[in-house]
Image (cartoon, rainbow, N blue to C red; front, side, top):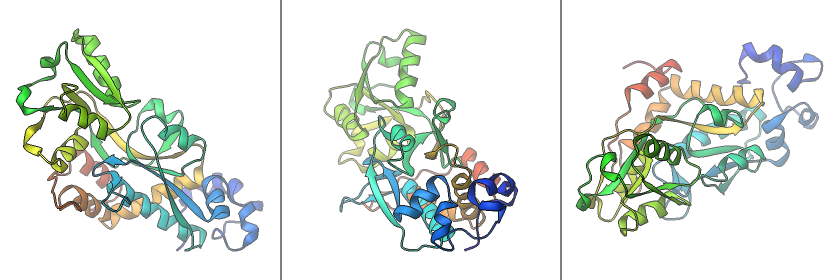
Length: 307
């Protein structure tokens, strides 16, 4: 594979990646380890790239029946891994999986515990101060999951009731802001992960779970009793997802963007989307979530052919 660092980036990257400004393929021999920087240097030295995954974020990042990480975000990250192997000229680079949650995912990227965080993470300005993001992989928003028997039709019906969220999520911020703005006096209950929040709704401990819409729909689809739940229509926030990695790493940033350009131009981005949102999941269930107009436009801006 030829070096995927964008030509326009060479004047800046040459000083980082090469001695004397000589721009040749990466990782030709052991001496080049000293010429690399950032994530690529770490991966070359350890022969390992570490992926942070979520245990219960269907269909983005979750554990299958064999307790192996799978999902839409995982597949996209594995495409980046393939380009890293090609860039470094080393097919023996291994993937190490590390479970992360909403509380430790950003610190794990910042401190280098994980090289790629592959879950359901919203790209926003506050987080951009700490980490870098891939191009947008999904456009979501906060909605509310409730039990049908409760006959709740809108977020306004939750006045004085309890709503569950996962800790340190944009959903927590959205529901607290909404409650304060409209005087709803909602009791916000925090949980470590999505599975705990859903269980609390199912058992009647809370009245609703505020989560990203795609995750709520997927959780209902995978539930033992899906007809007992509904997702309310109201959008309470806007949440574009991206894959996180460390900031201030221009070579790795160029590689990630190259991967997405490649996947878009070959329509592989759309195929991976269709695999997880329109076709049968490993469980046999189908989500039936069509690609939004916003996401299609984003993919087309990266080079995906128009239909």
